[in-house]
View (cartoon, rainbow over the protein chains, first blue to last red):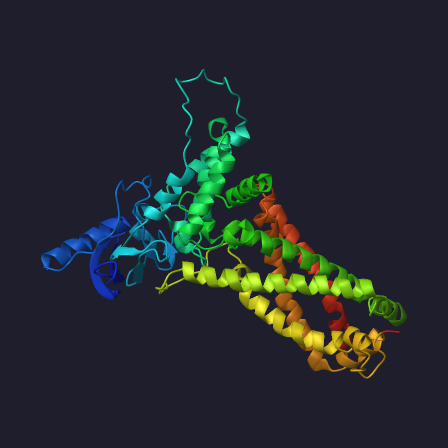
Length: 251
Length: 224
C-alpha cells in the first residue's frame, strides 16, 4: 500500500576533490514508499535547484541494476540496507516515516571523491586494463559444444561474470581491499577455455595493478560478499589466491 | 620478493605462520591435559622439553613464528588502515553473516599477546629459562611443572585471567583457522561452510583442553 514519508537526510557535500567536505541536513516531505531512492534524491535536487542552490552530485546511469554506476553508502551499507540490490533498485518502503538517513560517498583511498557523492572508480578500469581480457583472436563463432565445458564451471563463471564493478566490495571492506572484484574477473575468465590460456599471467598482472593502486589486503571478513549487489561469493577469492600462488611457484 | 610486495604474498605469510602456531597450540593443549591425569606424567613432559637441544631449537623456531605473525599483522594493519583513506564513514554497520572476530583480529591478537607475556613470565621464565641460565627463578625445581601449576592456579584471580585469555584466543582461532586456508587458496563454494564449521569445532576443542585446567582448579581440583 502506498504511503508517504517525511525524512531527514544527512548528505555528504564536497565541492571538489581537494575541498573539505561536510554533512548537510535536508528535509524531504511526502515521499511515496513506491519511489526509488534515486527518485527521492531527484525530488530533493529539484527543490534545491528551485531554491537556486547547488544540486547534489551523484553517479547513476541505467537505473536497473546493471551498469554499476550508482554508489551511495546509505545508513552504513553500500547500496543501502536491502540485500542484493544496487542503490537504484532500493525503494523508499525500506525506510520508516521520520527516519534520519545518512548518505555518504564510497570512502576508500583508491576511490577519491570527485564531488559530493561521486567518486572516481577508474582504479577498477585500470585493473581490468592490466589483464581482465582475452587477447587471442577467437575467430568466427565455433560450433556449439565443440569444446565441452562442465555445468559446474559454466555456472561458476556466470556467477563471477555477474559482477558489475560498482565498487561496493572495496567500499564495505574495513581494509579497503578490492579482492572480490578482482577475483570475480580472474575467475570468470580462468574457468573457461578461452581465458584459461592466459590465466596465470592475468592473475599476476591484475593483482600487481590492484596493489599498486593502493587497495588494502584481504582479511577474509566477508563484508564484501554480504554487501555485493550481485552476491558474488568469496570462494572466487580463494580461486584467485590459488591461481596467483600457482603462477608464482611456477616462476 | 612477491611474499613481501604483493598483498596475496603477505597474506600467505600470515596464513602459514598462523597454521604453524595453530599446530603449536594443538601440541601444547594436549601436553597440558596430562596434568589432569597425573602430575608425575606432566613433570616427565616438562623434563623432556627442558634445556635439551631439540627443545631449545623448537622454542627458537616457535618464537620466530610468533615474531613473523605479529610483525606481519602490524604491517598489514597499517597498510589496510591507509587503504581506507583519510575520511572515515560516519555510520558503519556490521553486515549479517560477518563475524565480530573477523573484524577485530588485531585487537584480539593484542589481548592474546599481553596475556602471553604474563604467561611466559609465570611459566617459561621459571622453567626453561631457569634451566638454561642455571639461575633458579621460581620456587620449585624448573622441571616441576605440576608444582608451578598448583602454585599459580591456587589463586582464583589467575584462573579467571587465564579463562579470559583463552576466550580471546577462541575468538581469534574461529576466524583464523578457516581464514588461513582461504588465504592459501584451499577453499571453494562447497568447502567454505564446511571449513567455517571445522574452524569452530577445532578451536573449541583446543580451547576446551586448555581451559579445563583453570576451570577445574577454580572448582577445587588438584592434580595427584
